[in-house]
Image (cartoon, rainbow, N blue to C red; front, top):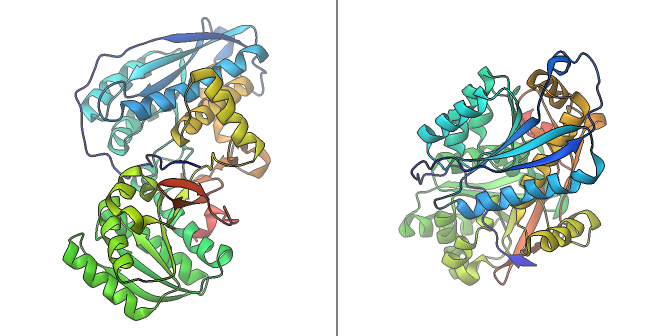
Length: 406
């Protein structure tokens, strides 16, 4: 088990001042196997660069460092296998400040030796820089942002490793039924845009499965409204409740559920796996089931092996963001190895990761990208237990993302 991690936020609202880019580069050799037409490679000179963009300052500095350390580990592990062409990993500082992020993105786009970009932690920052990378024909591999609105009309240059928020809500509906055998469900949402999106996606999937939605409550996040909403849920007697809410509102709902001694399963999105929720809700959060992108506390050799190697290299324990950074860099190296250098070549190669036969084998399983901007990948469930997250029973169920798009 591990401490409840800082889960992906729907939209980071805190902004910090832009800092001057700090840089370092790691040079490794790479054997690039050419496939198809290589219009960029014939005149290519110098190293191929992969830009890693994370905040070095501000409230998300810790998360940025984890993503960076994961990417560095992927680079280091590739060194012994590659030869001939130099590849540079260049680190850029980009806090959650759209103006500063645009300036950094313009510098990256102007460097024609940059073949791909890995990074960005904040939804608004990601949205601000996407037009720059689209114009420059640069592939952007994003390991951590789940906001649905970022992906709309942006399926050819943005390659998200994380599920969308709607996907995780739909997955939890499938999990409640197929994994836990529940048929009578209820939803309570906090009236935020995030909560409404989660609620709509969960409802659509529950309807597709033929489940009974016995209550669908929408209240604001005041204590009085939370109490009223939970009373409505209690009258409906559901077997399971989905919390479509940010952590603050969800903590109020959990406290009210606990005070009313309501039994049954309570499920929620990955944001509710944050330590701050447990600090607000305390014992009321015990048993909460939350969606997760990876379960690092498992006996599976791939995940446990990553944790062990990361601890040896960096003398600290990884979290899901470190794992996402590791997979993001591994994917960039894989497609670069297959395509050869150059932005056009790499874009063609990563767009070919489009189905089960061409899927990238990430830490949590196979992943590929659909033309509508979604990523098809495994999703998991963890249980809050004494302030820690542990794999739920069962830890997952089969869930093609395409289900939630039909």
